[in-house]
Image (tube, rainbow, N blue to C red; front, side, top):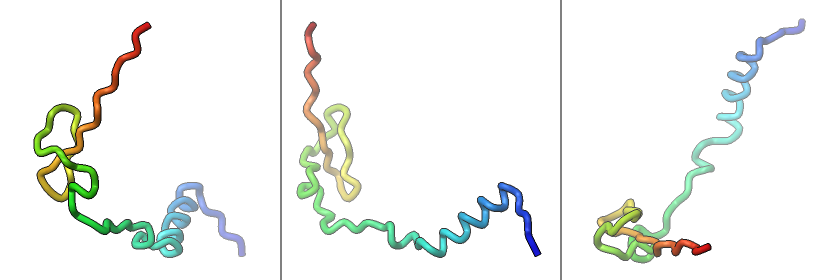
Length: 70
């Protein structure tokens, strides 16, 4: 007996099967250190275009890029 599935059902079953084959926990990443300074977040204030450390009140502020004069 042959079962014909529509494209939508095939995608649904493929996604459902892949969730069992590749558990989400295998894609999780751990951070060894929650120390903001060790991760490069050394500024104590947001100067402009800074990124906030997810573990504390520190910021990473990249150096401003110089514009090329032509």
